[in-house]
Image (cartoon, rainbow, N blue to C red; front, top):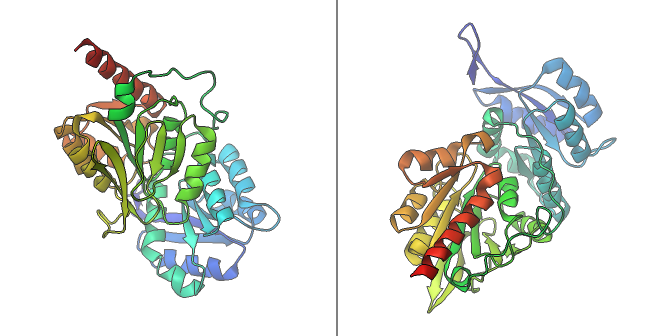
Length: 365
């Protein structure tokens, strides 16, 4: 809630756009049950929503993906170009729904929530805290220009190679992110050369979406990107994404790094949790790890990044200006867990520069 010039509290104004009358009714029930937000209007399709945006000037829009007359993604693209505003997508948990949700984040949506498959009324009402929380985050999030992915395989031209066996076998890059993180992770991974150290990633994302996320990144990057599989060896030139609903940890088997994937209880209310991944890197990689904390709400990852730094890792945080939500990096910086605060567009270059400097020092020894 925000205070206006008279000191009175203004509720977050929400416009709900969905072709299902039931979903519109349930979303209205959920949102209006919250003390700090109110549905100012609902729309059955984007063409109706377009006029309601002008009429009500909402703070946040919830937007269905599949609708008549105009697809939700097509409408989102027009909206972010002509009248940018925070949008939370409402997506079906299907392969097409997950791909559409990721495309929506690419176009500038802040976040997404999935529709329950069965028992829609009870299912959606059980999402009350989740939906309300995403709307609150969206209302306070920073709108950044929609980023167009570079051509598949990187940011154009040939990426410099590291050419260091030591870096490839020993060094690791460990990344954590939440709200706004899917596009931030893409921007970090896409310029990396194919001989990069292995990368492990914890992104707050529900089950059913991380496989599509990994496939999308794999088609855009020079490195190989996949969902992590329990027990697989962690290899250079590969990035491993924690599956939705599972923790990802780093462990060792002899001289090899190995991925551990499990469903231990949530940490900081999250599974995957960034702290779980960072803690494991502190224990098993120590000074050979590089920690990167990106945009996200809350403080998951701050303590783990501190333990990584204490174990000798070099640590980076995304700067406030380039974050959709500055919560997680801010908490890590305040804790003293961060060596360098870096704009997102410079993150991959700074990480590579640190790797090269490490390799040069090692070669002098």
